[in-house]
Amino acid sequence: MPMLTLEGAIGTTVVYSSAGLLGPDQSLIATRPFHSPHHTISTAGLVGGGSFSRPGEVSLTHHGVLFLDELPEFNRKTLEVLRQPLETDEITISRAMSSVMFPAAIMLVGAMNLCPCGFNGDPGKECHCTPRQIQNYISRISDPLLDRIDIHVEVPNVQYRDLVSDSTCESSEEIRERVTKARNVQLNWMVCLYLDSQLFVW
Picture (spheres, one colour):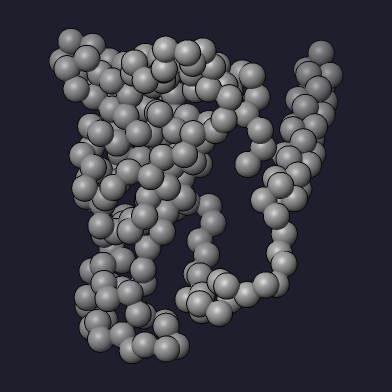
């Protein structure tokens, strides 16, 4: 991902400060946060809450990446609360006496198997799951949540020889440079559209 801007760093730092997670010598969070909570996490732990409405993992990942491994293993009701932040970049915690809004502009990355045993589609091992078991497993993630995930990629099993091979590949720094250039093009295009609309209104 592109480097965190000063505005983004301040926004992320504010969230960590409100949660009391800033170190004594830490005044600014300058890197994008990455969080990977376990699938047993509670709804309050993921989105925030409690007696004093503390931010949860979603808000603590503001301007960063929230990685949910074994996505279908998460509680379905817990996953459903992700629909709001994925759509509005914020999460609202409502209690009897108050309502608190936390920022939550996140990139959600989820990983899952195609069946309970994990061998569905694997050319080297046979899957013994029934079609009903596979359907029940996949249906743990609701369609409205899947609709908010823009990119779905099926990743084949990577062989050990490929992991340890000496073949060179594109470095993370090179990928970041390409992503940054693409983001800049997108931002410039949006600025041009905004200026054109202002001229038209004027």
